[in-house]
Length: 446
Ligand SMILES: NC(=O)c1ccc[n+]([C@@H]2O[C@H](COP(=O)([O-])OP(=O)(O)OC[C@H]3O[C@@H](n4cnc5c(N)ncnc54)[C@H](OP(=O)(O)O)[C@@H]3O)[C@@H](O)[C@H]2O)c1
Image (cartoon, rainbow, N blue to C red; front, side, top):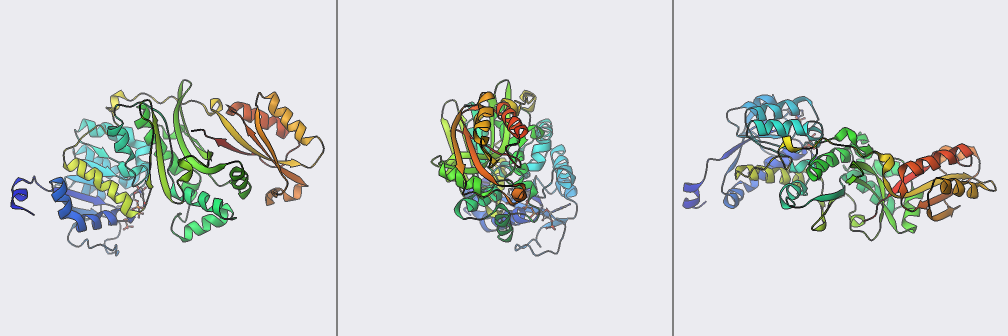
């Protein structure tokens, strides 16, 4: 370090880190390795002052013996030796919430990667930060290593977002990519993903779409200046996607991706997470495996897409560190982009008014007149069909194998409403020409 830099340097920023798992240990390693370089580049030393986790003795691949230890993350958050509190424990309530509240109440800035916490308490925590004149940074909470929060809050500060959509769960993207490349079932693919460490032992949160929903709720608030409304999201996961869907979609020029999408619609805002047919040629279709991407459509710059690693220790810790550096430099913007008092109440646009194209796969009884009866019912509901595809080569799912001979029929609709599709499918089911539940996948146009 040069003498000039030493003389003019402000006091070090003393950081307390609670949670030393995948992200926390990466962050400690990064600060140990790059501390001097970061000080040279950003003008202030970042020092780890204290840490907390459940087990003090666990080998984490980094040396933590030099830091003060706290069993209780709340005590760490309140410690006089800590200027900034980093929460990397996880969970929407419990010790994470208690410690973040304690730090903010004491006027200390917080950095967290915890989307569950933000989705549930984000507005309250941002309000508390405003009241005590401090900040909460959460870049890492949405799409891990992709700087989408800063982009929205600052880079697009002058723009008006009309739609945000993205692939925000690496586990689901990995599974759908593999299913598209190999003739492998959802279940087998999930087992592989677990063996490779891409999926949790309990994958429900990821594959049922809830993780994406948490991230979408945070993004929607920043995009549309509304209160975070994580309970107001239409959520469908990927567990029902079959090889038949993947193959038919591919033949029609589509890929299936789990998207989180929010847009202004009618009198409110649509927030939805569901498997989606996206044109093979679209940029989002090319985001494969564990990668994430978020696309922002705005009035002035049309579309901006950010793609990159959505998870993993180093990528996520790099986003946490970027927030810490912003705070170290005194950079402060309202956590949710505008003061919380200016956030509008969220008004939900009901899913039944959603407009778009639909992919409908039916298992149709092999009886004369079935096809004509089904297409008539669809027409009676005011739906125009773009294509009708019969795929006798695609076998019915094992769950309905004992219900007689069936054929796979796929209908692709032109733009219509969710309520028209639901009405048509109810009538088709009542007519008795189909077996099992229909598969319905929404088509997104870009
Ligand atoms: N992993 C990723 O790729 C990723 C990506 C984006 C965001 N995030 C978010 O980052 C956060 C951390 O994720 P992670 O993957 O690093 O989790 P993790 O590997 O499970 O680590 C959690 C850490 O919290 C500690 N902990 C648990 N309960 C505690 C308590 N009561 N007091 C103090 N420490 C406690 C654990 O201690 P022990 O080690 O002693 O058990 C562990 O060190 C989560 O909010 C997650 O959603 C993670």
